[in-house]
Image (tube, rainbow, N blue to C red):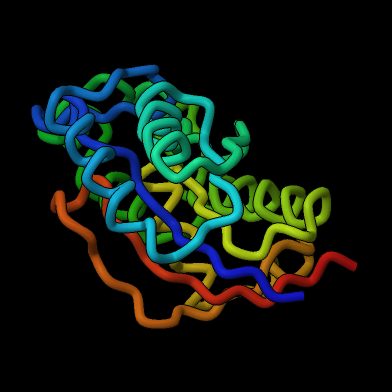
Length: 204
């Protein structure tokens, strides 16, 4: 079965602008983020999406709702698409994170391995959770072939990493096999951006 995924990060929040780590903290979109979502709905119109699925956190859900309403397609909540749980690093600014937890751990956290901030998830745990969420969706709704999942920065990075370099653990988890195809950024810088993913999905 094939499913074309348009993977998005939510629009901008005040914490994004300030450089604070959000994790599972439920921050709302700011005015820029709302405008990004509205603009993106128009850019997506020619792609004839069948559905939009989203993390249940407000910044992703609001972005996805604006797009889904603009396109007239169903919106489905999927908590598995939440941002990484970053534990004690939540709410901190990056310089504070490096000062409190050290440069080594902070850099390792970006390498998609088993590093985690105290009380938080590893990159692998975030990836497996997100891929399993996409797999559940496709298994439950196989008639939807062009899907727009809305998630978060680290969660989207993990999906892109799995797309380019699926690991043995990913395969054992029975998640997704994704091939990047012509990824491009839509307006709004790092927020409201998209990668176009062509996905071969094993749901056996």
